[in-house]
Length: 199
Image (cartoon, rainbow, N blue to C red; front, side, top):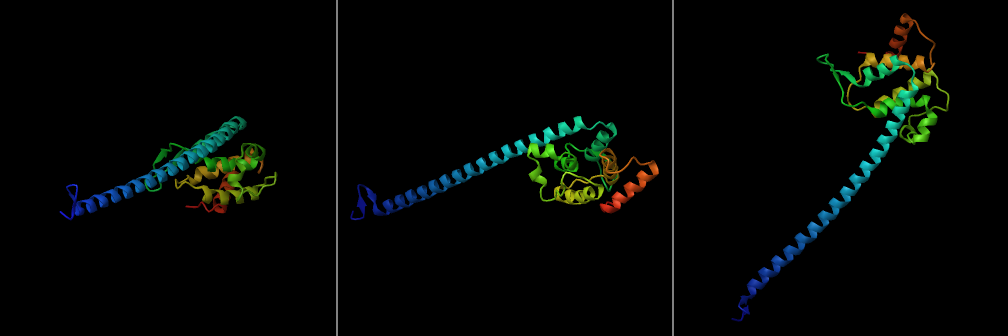
């Protein structure tokens, strides 16, 4: 009787009190977990908004680019280079669901510095971008050497198609004069060597 109060033994109160303390601990942990999850959700939401804003800027530039390029052969070569890929072991060509936008835009930004700055995309490439309005072939190839490894998406770019694309870009943006078929093949071989794209 000395260990009982109101029909509950003191041992029962101790047990009840421990359960109550455990409930408080669980509740505090649950609150902390919910708060952490809310912070993570907010961060993800902010990241998605930033990605959406950045994707909109890339889309605006690509829309502008496709309207500005007046050479169907160059447009087709962009498609062949970035929407098709060849499996190295099986040699099968398959279509990609999406292209590596940051590389595609990066390939063209030296020729559209004003537009890139207006869209606010220049800061993405600032650590590899060394142009001061003028673009020459040597600087351009050097820039491409830095662009590819920095923004590669681990999907193999067909080396032949890529060198054709660079050759077309060099001619279209007058980094080279119009080349004969033979000279163009030499130029593409030089590009492959320069960019270490040999098999």
